Image (tube, rainbow over all chains, first blue to last red; front, side, top):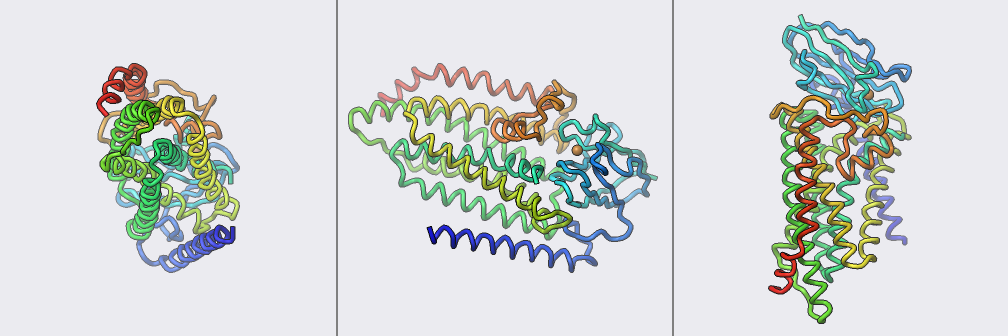
Amino acid sequence: MPRTRRRGLRAGRAIGAFALASLAVAACSGSAASTAPATPVPSGVIAVEAAKDSAYSFTPSAITVAAGSVTFSVKNAGNEEHEFEVFKADGTTVVDEIEGLVPGLTKSLIVTLEPGTYQFMCKLNGHDQLGMKGTITVN
Amino acid sequence: MLATFFLMLREGLEAALIVGIIAAYLVKIERRDALPKVIAGVGAAVGLSVALGLLITFTIGKLPLVVQETLEGLAAVLAVGVLTWMLFWMRRQGRAIKGELEHGVDLALSIGSTRALVGLAFIAVIREGVETVLFLIPILSFNGTGIDVVAGGVLGLIISVVVGWAIFAAGVRVNLRRFFTVTGTVLIFVAAGLVAFAIAEFGEGGLIANTGTAFDLNRLLPDQGPLGSVLRGLFGYRSAPTPLELAGYFAYLIPVLFLFVIDRPIIRRTAVAS
Ligand SMILES: [Cu+2]
């Protein structure tokens, strides 16, 4: 029994240390061009809120950007899991995606976009059919 | 809290199921001595998952989509191969053991077979492990998440381990014949789910064309909901599969299930041979 407890403590400490280390990394990687999810949002990124007021939507749902490397910072403001998938105009070819976006979490995604139109959706449990989608116009 | 709980449960259940069955199997065939190797295999997979997860997160942030989907698809294909081999091998061994034990003879598990079982435990864990760590790191770093979100994720992982342990405990208790029939059937569904999963991954990676919707149960039984998560973790259930995913699922399920049921003559031969 004491053995189990000690192991539990050690695991707890490890998780704690891990969380601290992650925070430290998040705090000092602000200037570095890191794509780590814990990176604070630098200026020039497109902030998107998923499920604002727990609605099945993205805010904003129409985005216009310049061609090239585009950073999205997506925050899940709702209370269930969501995804952020960027598709080509056909709506089926995935360009890139954010998965495991649990409530409260903010994750960033860097994609290279060419002039034209793209779509973004959350296909989790068919949320796209409920309105969790939007368009990206690239100039 | 609940969202993270189901996310981690989904990631952990399948690995827990496979490892639980392997461990119970080794006990049933009187090869408890091979258990430490399986545990070492699981430990190595967990360690490697954490190392890879940390490395990916703090260097390139995330793997390029094509690389990630291809790797996940290949890992699933590899798991299907080893699982299928194990199914029929276990069943043959099961029959042989039953006959031999009645005559009081011990059955030797060849070194190659033990390695394969350890390898399967390793694949089952690392397949889910890297993705789980990649999901957990931002959650654990409290990046906008509260303690309840973290707790939900950790609880989901703990429940997965408990389920694996329960499968092991139940597997050890039931009689040999029922053990092989039940675990064999369950593993066939798991493998069929992996086939569909591999198709989905290759499709997302753009390696194959995989579009359309065969049926849509998103409103009825969403695969990220409470029951759907469990079914997805265990049997690769998807609430809105593409026609190709559905076809792949049954193209594996039906013939393998059929062969598994009619496998008796081969078993007799092996039983006699050993
Ligand atoms: Cu969603």
